[in-house]
Length: 65
Image (cartoon, rainbow, N blue to C red; front, side, top):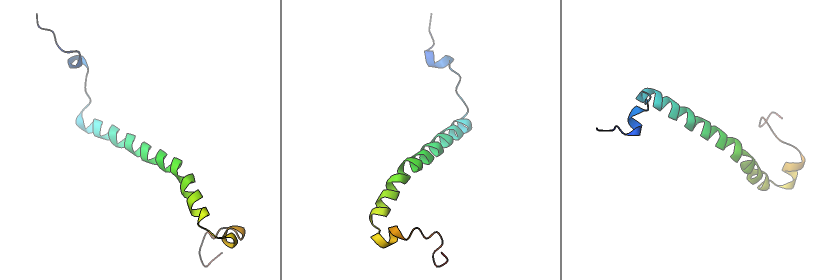
């Protein structure tokens, strides 16, 4: 009697569905990476500013504020 491998009984999603799931996972990973890395970016940018730039506050719109 021949036995089937255990993986043969597991239904597999369609290729299109698998690509969409993979795209969603990578989108979430990139988004979360940006959330985690933004504070480090902020620290580096702030460390490059001089004293007067930090004391006078941020300029959200250059030449307007």
